[in-house]
Length: 277
Ligand SMILES: [Fe+2]
Image (tube, rainbow, N blue to C red; front, side, top):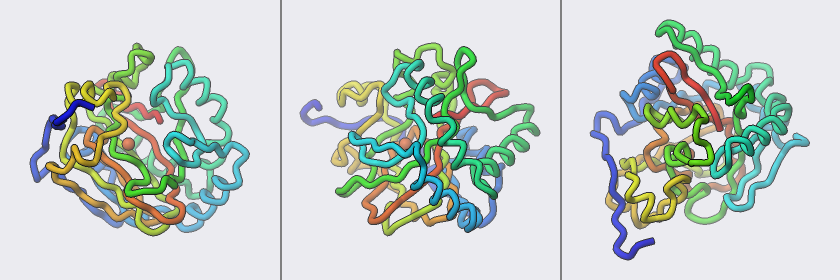
């Protein structure tokens, strides 16, 4: 990192930079996030308890459970982050059955979310589908539990830079960077702490280059974020939250398991929302 590094980028106005909160799912609010009218929305306690329990049981008992060391977590599924398109799609194919097993629980939050969004998007003449490339499908969701020790369970980062990796040139998810990039998280198990933290900055490429994270967006030194407003969102088991991943965000310290079903999504053209992981 350069000495005297100063993070620069876009700050959004206070009307935008907030979470809407509801106790029932409302796809119109998700549309607002997709179309850049609001930062985020949290739907409290919308995942049926049986579906949470079954998701958690299938996750921890899965033969497909993987350990990620660089960014400590347990997960099922594949990350496109810092990979070539081919590597990502190969990993996605290998992990697809294990992912589906967790997504296909009775009362599945993943299916409920996708079908509600499909109906809402249809009203706008659009659709939602898993991203694909030359007939191969991206991963439908990552199910993961963060357990890094320290002040952040997941370090400050953003989800836009990773959509500019030259190794993924031509992969349709790169077109999402021309729109909004939305992070979708469904919390099925939550220990103590583990709040979502979002800072009011969308870093620019100069800042990314200075940090050497132009194509990863991971991670931003906590000091560099001091001058920006931050939101802290308490997350509980059963919550579904969606937010604009172009803003720097993190998960703060957490004790116990914080297990989420998650994916990224965005418009790639006026009629198409794709999702990836
Ligand atoms: Fe993220």
